[in-house]
Length: 329
Ligand code: NAP
Image (tube, rainbow, N blue to C red; front, side):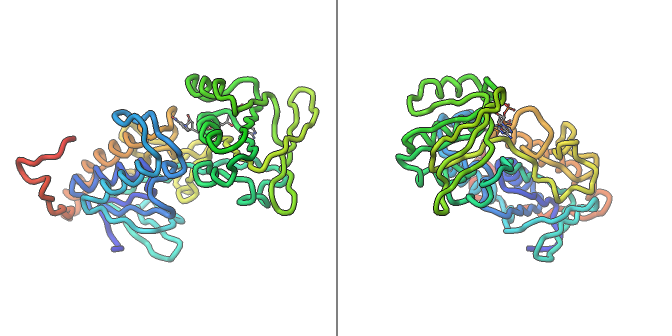
């Protein structure tokens, strides 16, 4: 890893990888920093069926395809946990390294929200899981409970129903938040049951493993216990924005405020994907954000070069990009 880049991207989910593809293809010396595996939420998603042009693809496969494409134009990829980004676009890593970008794109996505009830923390990895794709196989022919009524809860319930003996979805209102067509699939799946107007109050365990969950009726306050081996909370997300807390670019819920170019109010600092304040959080909008930010900042970088006289390193063209072999897009 060097000290100075045209573009530093923090996060290698669909938004970050798309930004890397566009930035590196435009000749910007690009670094992608990620503190997990590339792909972001894709690697925790069983199937993607709403990415135009691809009818059905496993999340891990799409993640790998995006990663390979994003790094095929000399974007550098490195492990890095980012603690802080300052307004001069210095990016501070937990190992003490500091890299500077002419521009920085924050594409750190969101993290799963906890239930914050007794028994949750101590049973993480012992029956409580936030990733059906990663852990679903441990619950083959067992009873599992999913908490939440959004797209994530319902999609992952359908996946779990393919493995578990039964899936009970618990929602706190009498309506789901998820899209209608996913709700329909839930109704049609004989292995999935729904308990409405209940909230989880406590996770129960026996000999170090989850044995059930206690629920409370929101109207009557009556309590009941559902016996189960697995509990999958899907009660929403919170943005990963700790590293930009001091920049004054967040809304009251911690999401990044950006303009049409995905630039924050600080010139040269952009954000893309789920971490932004936006109305639709999907793969398709994340990749759009990444492309928009990288294309806009290319102009910003050019203006900076005019000022500084420093020119970005142009990548060597691949065979497939030489005249007469132009890539689509
Ligand atoms: P979400 O849409 O915010 O849904 C969260 C669910 O959890 C809601 O049903 C909510 O209930 C419930 N909930 C929240 N706090 C709770 C608590 N303390 N106890 C019990 N229930 C609680 O979250 P998400 O499903 O993670 O989705 C996040 C974003 O990603 C959304 O914009 C979603 O559309 C998007 N997404 C899209 C796809 C797709 O396009 N296929 C897939 C996954 C996610 P209330 O409804 O009562 O508030």
